[in-house]
Amino acid sequence: MNRGIRAFSTAFKSTNINAMQLFANSCYNKVDFKINENKFAQDAVTQFSAFNIGCLAVTDDSNKVVGVCSERDYINKVAAFGKHNTQAKVKDICTYGPKIIVAHPEDSLDVCMRKMLFRDIRHLIIMTPENNECVGMLSIRDLIKATMADKNETIARLSDFKLGKGGFFGSE
Image 1 (cartoon, rainbow, N blue to C red):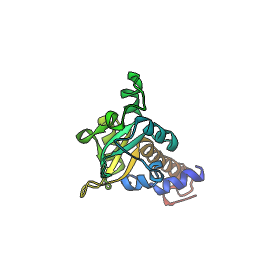
Image 2 (image 1 turned 90 degrees about the horizontal axis):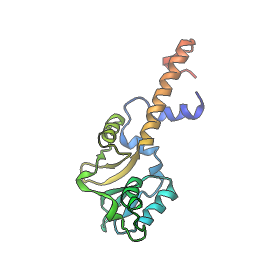
Image 3 (image 1 turned 120 degrees about the vertical axis):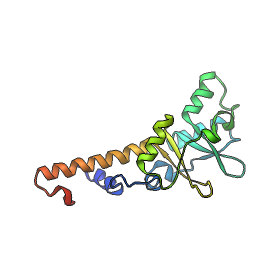
Image 4 (image 1 turned 30 degrees about the horizontal axis):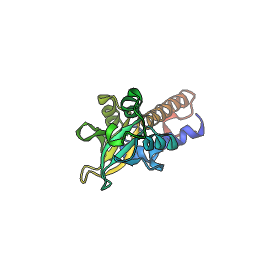
């Protein structure tokens, strides 16, 4: 197994990974993934493209997260109907309120995956349960990377064990 995969898998040991640990290695951790609901849909598309992301947390005028706007929202509500993206606002195309599925910082990788599969979504906002503050965002790609790193680590350990390299005791 190459050194990059081993380093990544070390950061994601087993199934005890929580949403905040996933966020620490997410592409969303390094970018501004929020957009005001009064911006134009074109502004959302510009952020999607500039940061190579597929979803934005939508904020109101007091900077509180109130929804999500995804590439899928744009395609289904702007592009598919031939609307002009400099006329449609983010608030016209985003998903609001109770329809949003969120993760909590302590949610495990498995819980996050189940939430995404339950609603057939590709992104989760991480919200604190105490004050309902947005502290991060995850994509399905983040969860797949963590899952694959764990599986690759298991395969490497079993292969090492088969070859007599100590397998379960951190052999290199």
